[in-house]
Length: 183
Image 1 (cartoon, rainbow, N blue to C red):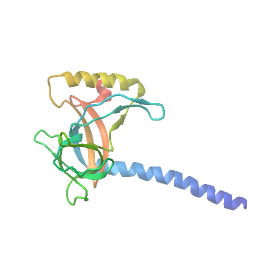
Image 2 (cartoon, rainbow, N blue to C red):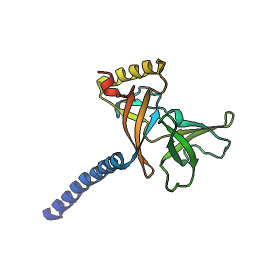
Image 3 (cartoon, one colour):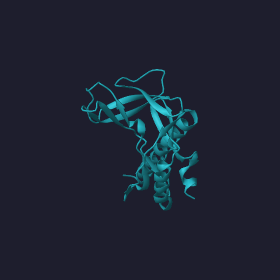
């Protein structure tokens, strides 16, 4: 191969390596600017992964919901229609296999269906919140303490939703971003 061809291929690969991540970032920024914000009440745990780093794993109160429909399969892709409850927190209005029109929804997966309790458990795509490694443990302890507080719904994740996609913006304790709370 001629050096000019090799250089042309190199330039195309370099452009692709810059273009793809920038499109992903711009897509998330678009959801943050144009999406509808929802507060998801959280119940985090604090794992560590040698490849991902330190993060807070988030569990959400609305991940489990009662239903008599027992036809759900593990890892099945579903659409979850979201709305705010009377207190301003996200709640599941409907879970469906068809893409809803004209409603705020997000894509999720079925974790499992508990036939005994008639409960559907969902896995949301925004269940990991990455933090400064030095603050993650303190954030976990602060969250546990806040959960023991007498104030209900004082820990939540702010998630923006647009056209089925969701972006986790921040995690809050008593209306303060969790990274600021632990300082």
